[in-house]
Image 1 (cartoon, rainbow, N blue to C red):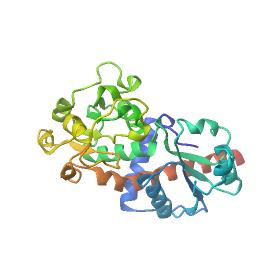
Image 2: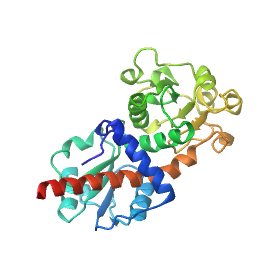
Image 3: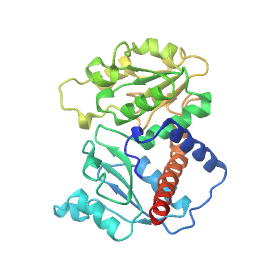
Length: 302
């Protein structure tokens, strides 16, 4: 069992993971059977990598040390052979972040350990999506009819892609805002673009995105102050938000670019709450895939 994209999960499985994540906030039941995890991060990460490590330790998993900079992949070993090596020595679940879109296509159906996608290029980020869903559900109880606007560098955002798919399936109204040059036509669809100031005044959730300069391969760019003036969440804009609306961001935040420094930790902000929820969600994801492995094992034995 893998979690590679949000499409790997049914709506009921999404809600099941969210329920388990909520339970982990109050009581932690460790996994008693010996289980081994490895985190293969070929892109820089603070939140996702640390959050998965914390989740694994809280669950009682044994975590193997893996450093992409010193691994044999630097000698030319393929990702497939790296993962097969970990499988051969007894790893049960691998969390992988990789700069290549859909890196997992070369692994799916060829490896027996479970894979959780920690982010693939500009493709998918299921664990971020699930922690975002948990944060939204805590505020509004239901997703049905919620106006969620994702703002910023849509074209390069795996967060936008995963969230748009799952939120729509769960009944939310998903819109996009930001520089039109940075929109993704496939995600945008017909009539889903909204002026940023209109989004500020009408959205239940404003999901701000980091400007990913490292992924830009085209010439459209903005100076920091220019972007902030046009598409940044300023104090003045926050004052025009609906009474119960919230601010989210997957982080790291470019303070003073996507969000004014004083707004990052304001009353409406759920940015650090998202990080807290990330541990519980990733515990629930690990439990989910490991439980499925056991079910399949018993089914095979029987």
